[in-house]
Length: 368
Image (cartoon, rainbow, N blue to C red; front, side, top):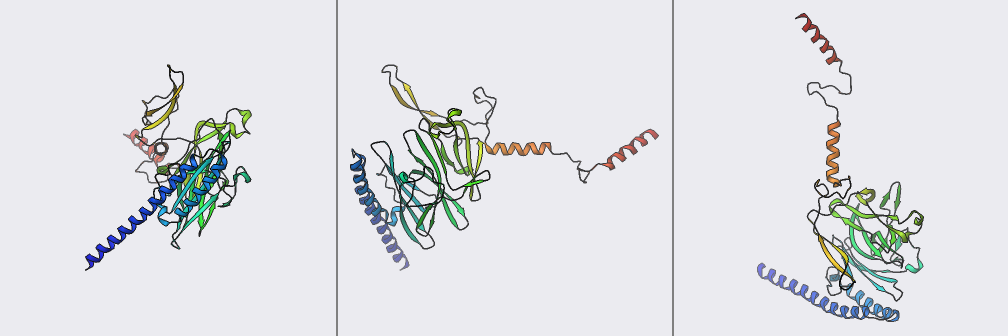
């Protein structure tokens, strides 16, 4: 009897999951059509109208709890960013205007585990009426606008704060990388938290404006619990006060997770995962047409500790943080004072006992 009940329960659950997937698949088809209409709109008026229709339908679909994990693979120009703990999802997209400025749209989906409830909150882009770089805690109704691409959960007591990495087109001269924090109070969404320590100073978010000429690296290394980033410097000393002339200077900084804080470490060494095959995009001039052509080349992972690797004319040899720590430990042990295992006394004190015995041994040898 139990076996029969279990079988029917399995069939019921399977049917329920399949029905949910079918419903969301139909919703996804509708959304894909609306998104295609939006992306093919030819002017700002049409973009505004079609984005409004798409957003309204998307919000309706996202209210279904199954949308928290459904892939929505056909919505290729909308970002679905999931937190590793499965409790939060960011749904994010942009609309480029005729003047090349960007309007950002975002829904935050999350589960309140304590109340076992599911919530969908829109972040409203009001960047035209906000300071260029907001420094305080802000609500979902006063969002600065960005495209997020990474979520990093950080435990603080019984709460989970979600560190997010993002990008903003910003202006014709400069772009922005942002590190922020999203957290929840019931169904309320807040952005910003005093988690970033720079020396004695603590900030609620980090915003890096830099030139459109270059791309700033900002990524999370899970194995080292750190956020790696390019260090930015002005192209010339005279440009110090103009962020649109800041570019990566070939050095790296990192925010390292210590407890529930991100602590800034300067001049760190960036290391690709071992044996990782990386790709690089280069532009090569075609000798026949005279035009630049885009090509992708493969690069193999190079161990920075390999003494046979090309040094590029530099005497500096990079090492991984783990090797640096091991070398420091060995150096400390090598420089430590050596203690005679037979002498158990404090090595920092004068060894009168040994000196006296040396004298006695000399007198004994003379008598002989």
